[in-house]
Length: 110
Image 1: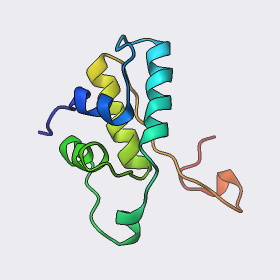
Image 2: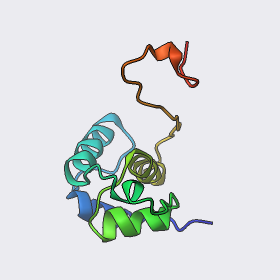
Image 3: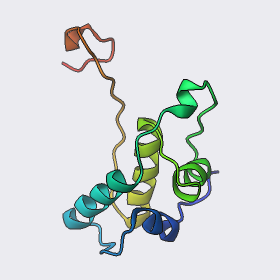
């Protein structure tokens, strides 16, 4: 089982001192803080290093080591934070499609 998310460390990383109530203002503020302070980064993917999505690994990389992460890392960490605060989350996957119709993707929604 993965370790629980360390909210205090996350809040320090994203410079969050606002409310922790599970409401729209908190969600909006936390999302802005997260994307402003934790950059998108694909170094591990490009270097063919393993990418771990468990909470402890994500906290070590994105929070404690001060690095960024790619979409799955970012979204998984943020969802863990929201869940710990009492938000109900629903996780979806997506893909970027360039130079082709969206319905050409095996994962396209109709």
